[in-house]
Length: 430
Image (cartoon, rainbow, N blue to C red):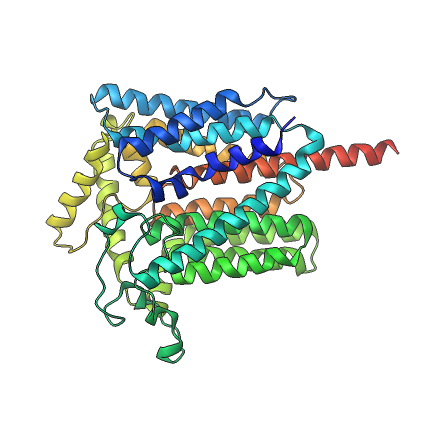
């Protein structure tokens, strides 16, 4: 049986990449091996599954193992056993631990497990939100290592976050008091911008299951957080997701026609995501970084085609940053980027063509997991939209503070689908 104490350890392991850097430097071997060793011990000590995993979650397990093999192969190929290589392992080891533990929860305790997980994400989000506001008001990150790389803001008129236009008097504008976008203790606003849409999807799912108004309040707080975070891609994504949820729940059309509408809307949004973001940038913000990114993507695509055969398992960790820096200097862009800031390109250069193919399989089996649930249409569409939007102008989702939460969401959907089937089975037997 899964005890409360074991669940506490499970949550500690899940949130290590968020809260451990407050105590340990995120740039050292101590942090990396603390997370890896803790997650590995938890994985090994988790009880064996009392019932088999769903086929989709079994596929996710195999995919994560293959990513670990790719990373280890890269280490030997480039003779690189530096800390960044081991950092790449963390999201997959954590996700495997999440799957192993969750699969050990017996069917009769699945409902309790789902409720506890959603409630835990709720508390983690609130802690990040409160501490992030404190960080930004103080103008200093709680993780000391992040301050060295942080920008220095002289005043509201120069602050990066004032690019957002809020039509209120200056003294009421929250950006007049914040020194930088909320980072969720992750040291950079775009990092939390990757995580917040996952939280929104989990709260959205909580509302789908229970119709509890508390989740609507949490979704509202996520919107507030993403506005103060200033990651435009995630803001657009979250608003679109919440609007689609509203139509799914409250627009009175047949299931068939409703699904067709959502699929068409999702395809259109996915194909025009870059245009939507550019329009949003022109109307709401003062930043031109999206235009710069689009030119970088053109360069990445050209380079990828020219060096396709060299990218079976990807370049070494440092090559990506050097490649991007070289292009920025040649194009006279006065910005500093550590990657292409496009998850599809970054993933291909870091994990290679083989890694990108595994990513496509990951998305396929994730959608398949949602197709087992009674809310399959809306969940599948929102998940694919999230993957596209987050990857298109930010970074790939295989990060230590993103992938484990995506894995947790997939597990909740999968377990809920099993509960739904058992309920229908019992009703048919009566």
